[in-house]
Image (cartoon, rainbow, N blue to C red; front, side):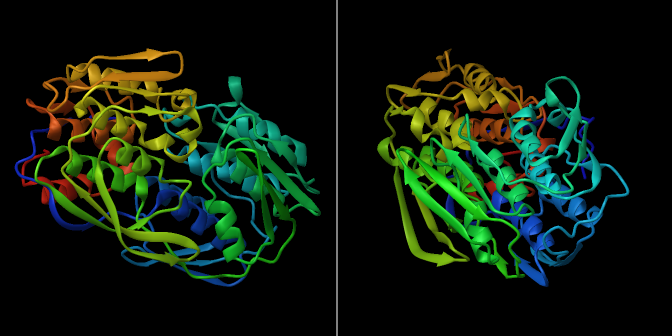
Length: 447
């Protein structure tokens, strides 16, 4: 794993040519994490194909090994997990180091809450600053005990419940991570675990739980949903084919939309409707963005995403769409910077507790490119340039991989390019990003 103590600056020049051809992005990070975790809780051997082999997911694989599962890499994207069964995880002999992955840390808190074992979890400097109470407070109702630094931050000592209780919890904020942590804890508890979300969030956990044999019921309630899980099921190993990550595809789709003459096909992209808010928004902006070869794989909709160079216009995005595209706002802001007219993205409070204060970081990125923008409460307002922004500045990434990749896309679309202060963190979610983008946009566009 890379040494993040040494910054790795990288620059993006205006794209050498239109983005063309067919590419495949790495596997979906959310599904990859869950495939390893649910495989560790299942009886039998789970075969995984298309697993994202970025640093975040590798941290989850290492944690599952420490908790007693057999986790083996068989080849590129091909993994085997021999599970321990529900309640069968064993006490780790070492600290669980989750690196930069908030998803892994929060979901594993739920997994550990239902097991009568002791564990200590830590992460890198960025993750140690991120709030964990939103997960540990509801999980404490199972009987688990969490002891961390001020604000519940990592390092965190976790003592799982010997006789875990089922949860009945209303999410105060839209968070698939908190919901999934509660469901993972509920696997080990008798009775029914019930989670209510006021706004629907990505449902990969529900889909995969059913795939492994759990009984999960979902009912609509207003704009949100009520999820019920029957506790103590026997999860049975099942093959998982991980689709391409729509969050990773987003960078290439936006780059193709912004570089005139582009037509790029991104193959095998996951199209779960609770993950595709960005694509819907880009179409509202006038993007030529279509789907070819739609299909279903492993309970998830999949297709080939086709992006063509487009003249975009400003748009207003309502707050209720945020959960379906929360990770994509930085690159959406890049599209808005190149659009004609003003864009306003509402209800982005959740961006403040990502790998960095991603709302502030996105605004600073645009300002570095000479784009007028403002943070108004939890809204981001972007004054589009109607074409190429000036560029020429440096993006402060704040140890945030999505800010780094968005800054590079902005460089491809700007007159004078952009510099990113540290590209090392891109490897946490998208190893090979630079070489893949250079292949699409022309050699030397990024380097």
